[in-house]
Image 1 (cartoon, rainbow, N blue to C red):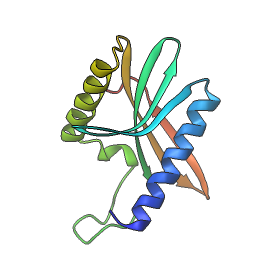
Image 2 (cartoon, rainbow, N blue to C red; image 1 turned 90 degrees about the vertical axis):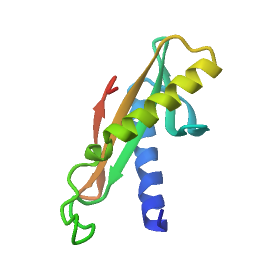
Image 3 (cartoon, rainbow, N blue to C red; image 1 turned 45 degrees about the vertical axis):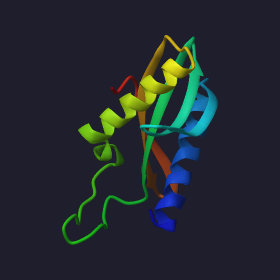
Length: 124
C-alpha cells in the first residue's frame, strides 16, 4: 500500500470514528489484527458490538487505464472481502465471548474538502 493510500485510509478511519462517536457509539478498538485480516474499527452501542469496515476515497476518478472510473468507496467491499470481514468478526467474537454483534460498512468520500459518509448498518 502506498503512503498516499495509507493517509487516505487513516483519514477515512478517523472520519468514520468521529461520525460513530457523534451518533452515540463507543469506539473500543482500532486496527485489530486477527488471523483472517484486520478489523478497522470495533464499536459498541446498545449492547451490540459492531465490527466496522471503512472504505475511503478522495476521488471517484483516477486509478489506471484498466480502471479509469473508481466509483464510490463501498464497491471495494467485494464478496471475497465480505468473507474476510465475516471470518475476522467471528474469530474476534469467539475469542472475546461476544454474543451480540454485527458488521457495518462505512464509506467515506471527500466532497469539497470534507468527508461525506454513508453508513451501511448490518451489511453482512
